[in-house]
Every structure is written in structure tokens, then in C-alpha cells.
Length: 293
Image 1: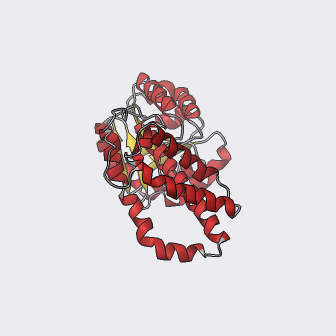
Image 2 (image 1 turned 120 degrees about the vertical axis):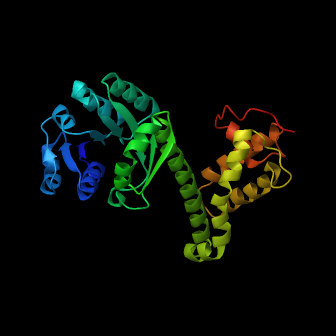
Image 3 (image 1 turned 90 degrees about the vertical axis):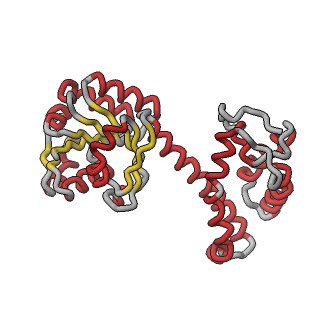
């Protein structure tokens, strides 16, 4: 297949290389033509403009810095987009993605948005995940090509911006997990306990945490939070201990103190016997508003 790649940063170059490795005819464009040289040496053809690059491909893959930049480049291609499929894997906000999808449709092209969940060296590997959203029939038609970019192309929704929100959600969870782990590591290290020794001994408990997420998701979707065991009121004493222990050892207390504040406020509002998922309301989940007994 003739494929165009717009944008040859670290990720865009990896995408172009994977496509060349799979035997596709690849045309590339980049604002700085010098960056294209390594890909050209691998067999890609360099176009002088976005419009010229788009004219050479049945599929147009865009990977640039920011959704506004992606829209600007695609708009510059204008009528050349007609009849083609645009797969935009640029980072950006959901609002930008929706605007770009409309822009592309206005030029007579199909649009998928992809959110890449791996680093550039892993592009093309069997375990690389890319979330895609947009028309299902477009995803199905190009799935084999998408598998070239990552062995686990995952369709999530017909709304173009859904894949962006999937990616943000994964990162949101990741940063929360990492911050909690690093705070715990500082606490353990202060006490002279090697962090590696801790992870060895605590592996069963740590491994159980991700397995709880589907159950928590179900509670949130149903907005049913009342539980018999492990309710919010039982979290507060442990949080008090963690804050006090951290303060006594000179460890930053902002993270556990913030969590304690959320739990205490929910208890004061009458949710002492609810699951920890009740706190989703603090963060603004509008679907989780039904009071449970």
C-alpha cells in the first residue's frame, strides 16, 4: 500500500521505518527536510509539501507535536485529502481531535485517531498497544496495516476523541501509582528497608491491586457504593498512621495528607460505610451521583 507519513520526529520516524519494513511504499514529509534523510536512505520518498506527500498515499499517517499543528498541516493539504484515510496519532486534547476530524471530513477524507501507548523503539512490536477511535468500518479495513505499527491495535469507540481520553486515563493512573510507590520507597528507605526486598515480600499484595480495578469500575458505572467490608471509615486510621509516620521521619506528607482529606470529607458527608470509589464524586464524575443506602 502507498502510505504517507507526515512528521518525522522520534515517533514519526519509527512509524515510517515500521511501514517500510513491512514492504509498504512510503512517502514522507517533515518541516525540516534534513530529519527525513535517515528514512529516505531506508527507501522512503521525500515530498516537498504536505499536499505533495498526501497526493502520494492512500493512507495518511500524521504524527506531529500537538493537535493544532496536525490540523494546520492537514488543512494545508486541502483537496488532496479527498478519498483518503487519515490516521492521526498526534497527541493533543479531545476538543482538538474532534475539530480535526471535522476538518478532514470537510475535505472528503476518512478519519481515525490513534493514541500510541508505547515508546518509539517498541513501534511494530507484538505487544505495542495503540488505541483507535472513529468509524469502526475504517478501523476494520485498515487493521492489518495498523498491526504493522503495533501488534495490539485496539478499537475503543466511534467518537474520534475517545482514544485520546483512553491514553490520558492510562497516564493518570500511572502517575498516581508511581507517586504512591515513590513515597512508599522514601518511607522504607528512611527506615533502612531495601525497596527491592519490600517488593519481593509484598509481591502478592501488590499484584492484587490491578485485579481490583474491574470491580471498582463496576461500582462507579452503577453508582452503587455501599459495602459491608473495607468501607471508607476503615481507611482513616491507616491514613492517620501513614501521615504521622511520614512526618516523624521527615518524609513529605502532601500526598497522604491529600488522600486523608478526601476520605475525611466523604465520611463527614455521610459516606463512612461506602466504598473508596465514592471519592470519584470529588473528582467530578457526574454519573456517580445516586445516593446509596
